[in-house]
Image 1: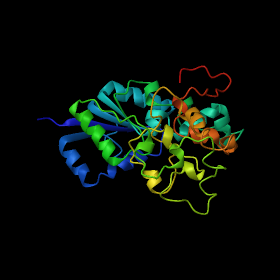
Image 2: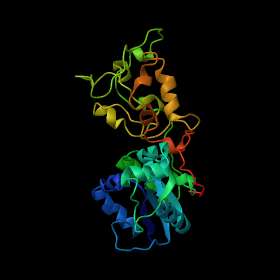
Image 3: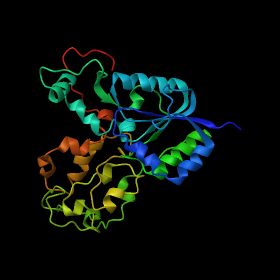
Image 4: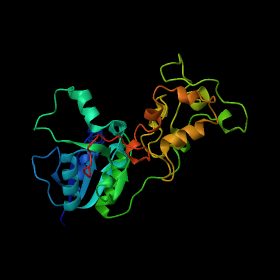
Length: 295
């Protein structure tokens, strides 16, 4: 019986999703018994091969990314988008707040420009689904190893796979008291940044302590790992539903439990609400003058 031909393509990102796959440790050995790895940063092959399944991580950020993604889609029967960058556009998607020329000038200065050896930036950061059809999406920064392996198993078996759609608060074990009570009073009388409090109660809901947490408007599936480490949810799983804006929903939901106008004084309101999902939002992208190409 022939093995499933598996490829792994890395686009614009930190390759943390690849680390998540490697964190499977000895399960990697079991995986390699059932698949033939035909293209990957771990193999010597330099040409994308025809395959049954391809894992693609990272967002579309350069002309090279566009070409690599289209080739992967053409040569794979099933394409799996891995991680928040691939599925949502990711943190790098905040570049869309600026025009391409402005970004290049900020990095290289007004007089210098990247040389011919570097691929040109796309006019905006885009998720994979903007360019090609994606069969399975696995959000997270990075996705849990077990989640990634589950999606990969489904792809190899030719089965459908999707993460649950409730919000992350359903997984969070923190105590929620005042937040669930019907009251005209605000739960907190101020809004704090993570480093502004001398002590954070590890058992109590962050919102009840005046700390911004993206849990109520973020998709479950991560196991609430950040909250277990006493850090508020940052929203890397993306919106729990597809019919609302993650950042705008944050403002709408938190306005009922935090001081009136308080969240508007956050240093980076957009970066908080759309930290991972700017490219899939209705938020307009800034385009440099003269930018008219497709990507």
